[in-house]
Structures are given as structure tokens and as C-alpha cells.
Length: 557
Image (cartoon, rainbow, N blue to C red; front, side, top):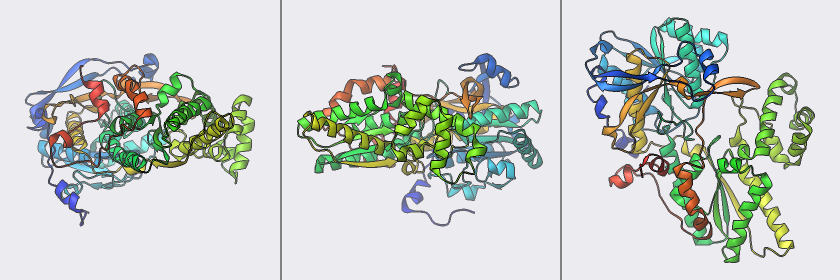
């Protein structure tokens, strides 16, 4: 059912027409897939090849102008599923899909599985019609068909997915998701091909975390919008501290496994402290050393009578601290191996006592040394992929507690005579469902349209790829990359699994190098920037700007 009520902004945004890349303007029948060279996985090539014997080594695909009317001769039904956490622009992916399919053949149909991958297993779906789609164009959220985190992984689940697809006569499945969801898309593509179903599976790169990117994917959709939303909030806080001048604000930002969001928001606001988890890991810093680095800045600013500031903390920081990373990895294995014993236990304390006994002595001692609340949070249920839910670990409060203790010790030693009063924040869900920026509205539409072209050409095991992103959208290039090219092997739930390799902040990368040159100045001054809210109308210099990260990564100079 189409939405009946729209806000004033939504009414205007509904009229926004995404810019279609020139290569796609005449529709799927006007382009042909151009095949490149055979590919290989990013790591563990022999292992990945054995796991994907039917889809490994496929060539990269780019689109070129050509007569391809065959894609529209027979009407098809294609299904789409939203998998994992929300990201701004998901609705426009579906809009691009629908428009691409209808352009090829007006009788083509698009259906959406409800509630994420569980909808595939339950055969729960709706047809996405033009009236339904029209009330969701250029809007945030995934509410048109909702999302979910069910993981299709058992033989029975694969068989059920096959049965659902075949029973309904669906020719292809489009999986909109992050690295784990697209890994699952690759596994489904391999299974469907092995079973000779003829069903295509195409992925679309989604995650606000920004860690699904590589030579084929310039950025994951939603990163642009989410970082602009967070930057507005942090910029407001920067203006507040510069006005009141009496608090330190510790802001934890979403980003489970990479610090891209924190670094990008740092560029946009120039906060005093910007922690990058990947640097902490590279330097093998302990939790105590991280605390010391924060305390040093606070002490230096205090000497200048500046008892205020803003510190940005990546959500996944705790996993980047080597001793904590080792603890969490061991915890994941212990919890997975002893699930039957732990599940019936009534209290967290009872569970912790069992875990203490199962952990190696050094790690058991480390866990016992943590504040009670943090130790309990580490025991929380894992996500469907076996990962600790770091969004529920209040790292910013841990750091404030430990920084305060450090400053108290320095005060006793006569090394600190200033004031320290802290306020904590976590900005996470606030950024996941915002109305997409113009960049994300255009980018997601192009990703969806590209996915439609890949599916109509019966390609499978590919992820939609749109490149040349610093150029105007009309000049973007489109195609697909084999999902297996991005695979490596990681340990999940105590077992070795194929997984798309996450893109972390690299210390040799242009964004981090640019940050390293200015962070000392940011620390001691009030060089704050106030980006304000996302602008959808007005000068193109404001409405069309991309992220600083993308600019640093893709500019030639």
C-alpha cells in the first residue's frame, strides 16, 4: 500500500529526478556487458576457489553501448531483499531496479521479500508497483519492505531459498546489503549455479560504515548521508563547547569494524581528538595507552585555560586494542562452543563465571580487571554472524571513567591542576535512515538500475559497480564485479568461513595522511567547522559535494 501522508520535505523530494548515467539513459536494451579479464580473490585464492568452483574467476563486467534488445523479449519476475542494517538510499536502489526492469519490458515485475532474508525462507513478499514505489522515492529507511539479519547458511535454508525462488518463477534475486550480506549473496549464487537453477543473484553494496569498498566499489551507499548527519550533530556540539567552554564531550560514532565514519566526521568538524582504531591496532596500543593519549591533550589544553573540547571515538575502538581484540576473539569462541551450557543460565554473573573458567588465564584476568558494566556488555548475545555487538558497549563511558582516574592521579602528582567535566553521546541510529543526500539519491538509483541490467543479462555472482564518482553522475561508469574477487577467509563462530574483506582505514592511505598533518593543530585550537544540515536545494557546491574521504582517495593529486 502506498503511503498516504508525506512531510513537506518528502513532497518536494518526491519530485527529485536522479541523474541517470549517460550509459544507461536509453535503457537496458541499449547496452551490452563487456567482459574483462578473469579475476581472482583478494586473498586465500586456492581456498576460495574450492569453495566457489562454479563462480570463481569470472571476469569483471563493464557496460558499453550496443543493441541488446534480447533482454526485453521475455517478461521476467525479479525479487529484491534488504539485508542487515538500514542505510540512506535503499529505496532509491529499488526505484532504479523497478525503472530499469520496466524500461526493458513493461510486463517485467519486481517483488520485494518482506523483513529481510527471512522473507525468502517464509515465501513472504509483495509486488512493488509504480504507485507504491512513487511514495518512497528519495526517502530514507527500508520501510517499503523492511530489513532483517537472518542469515541463510544451513543446507535446509539454501534448499528453502531455492524452492521459494522456483515456486514463484523468480529469475533473479537482488541482495542489498553489506559485506556479510553480499558474502551470503555469493554463496547463494554458487548454490543456485551448482543446482543448475538458472537463477541469478546480484549484490548491491550497502553500509554506512564505509567498509565495503575496493577497486570495484568507490564507496558503499549511505556513507555520504550518514556522515553528513553525524557531522551536523558534532558540529553543533563543537559550537556549544566553544560557547560554554566548560565541558569535554566524548562522542562515539557508528562503525563496527572500521573508523571511516569517525575520520570523515573529523574532517567535517575538526574536533580536538579523533581516535582512529586502525592506528591503535597498528601501534599495538593498550587500553591504558589510549587513555594516556587522551589525557595528554586534556592536560595541554587545560594549561591554556581551555577546560573543554570534543573527542570522537569509533564504535569499534575496543576491538582495535590488541589485548581487547584477543579477549573478544576468545570470548566469541567460548560463547559459541559452550552455547548449550550458557543459554539456560539465568544471570550474567553466572555466565561470566563460566567464561572466566574457560578463557586462558591471562585473558580471564584482563576481563576481570574491566569495569563491571563493560565486562557484562562483552557477554551480550552475538549478531547472526557471530560478531560482538559493539554498538551496545559504551566505550565512551569507559574512556571517560578511565581518563578521570588518570587525571586524578596526575593531580595528586602535581602534574594537573585543571578542571575536567565530561558529557557522553552515542550517534548511531540517528544516521541510518536519513533522507539520502543528492549524492546518495543519485548513486543508489544508478546502483539499482545497474543491478537490473546485470540480472536481465542473466549474470550471477556479481555486485553492482558504479565508478568515476568524483565526476558528475552523468559521467559515472557502470558494470559489475564478481563477488568472489572480494573474498578472503576469516574465523567466524569458531570456524573458517569465506567473507568479503572489510576495507579498513589504512595508515598509508591519503585520507589518514591528510588527517595526520592537521590533528595536532585541531587538538590545541578551536578550528571547529559547522557543516549544518544536509542541503537538497541551492548551490551545487553545497548540494552535490561528496565526502572528504572520497575526494582524498580518488583525486589524482
